[in-house]
Amino acid sequence: MACLRKRIREDSNVHVVLKTAFDEAGARTELYDQTTPAQRKRDLDILREMGATPETVRTAQAWSELLAEYIPDPAPICAPYERQTLDWQNCPNAHAGFYEKGLASLCLTRGDCEMACAKKNSCEMLEKADTFSVRAHHFLCMICFVGGKNPDEPLDEDNLYELWQKILREPDVPITVIEGPGDCIICPPCYAYNPESRLCFIAGSLRDRKKDLDVFSRISMVPGDTLPAREILYRIYKNIANVNGICRFEERRGFEWRNCRTHEWGAFERGMRIVADALSFDDEQPLR
Image (tube, rainbow, N blue to C red; front, side, top):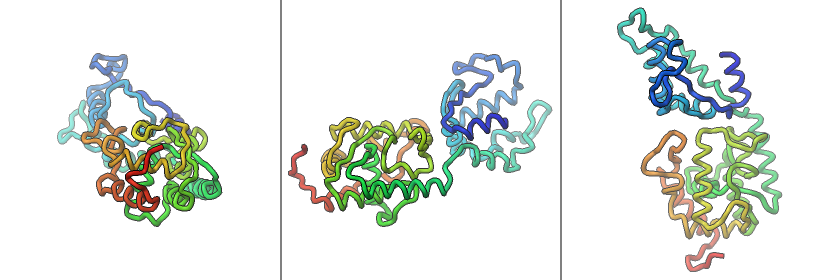
């Protein structure tokens, strides 16, 4: 267990395959004869709570997020028996708090000092830049921020405020729109950003990849295109009336595909009106 924890702490993007006494079709595996009925039941209880099956592959970070959301308390799984027998015993540690403490420290996140340093450096770079890169869906994030609850307060974990201020000062600054975190100017201060791999290690990374591509398809651009900020935002203004089908879906189809919460208070629509007014968009203005 110590080796496993060390491996995950070193790289929370390591892929973890769940193994049980049964395969994904319910047939016995080589683990069947090595486990008790209580252990087999516990494994299946855990899989059910997380909506997973044997042989499912996710990163360690994703599994930890799933556990935190769906199994915050181990007692219903590890100590479910009102009447214990020799074969069906409750775990004596189920109520001791060990699980909760271990779950909170399982995966590696960036320290406050590292994030603050990344924030300072990236903001200075954005301030001086003649051109820079932004991943496609972060323009929607910026619009939601502008229409959100505290649009005049910078955030510690991203540079959405700073991007908007840059665009207000230099509306025609050329921006390269990219797919994925990469060199995106928004991402460096984020707790989930890995500056070495330039990837995010949260479970929603795949969802955010789809958001990027959805935005590209709506505004008739492809990764690597460079346009003035005003033109990019005007394309969004003309072609994305709301975040339905990009950041929000009527039905949630799994943990990795969960909806963004900002749609709940209409932040995008409100932010888009503010952006349109600030940049003097004209409904009759032709697209380039």
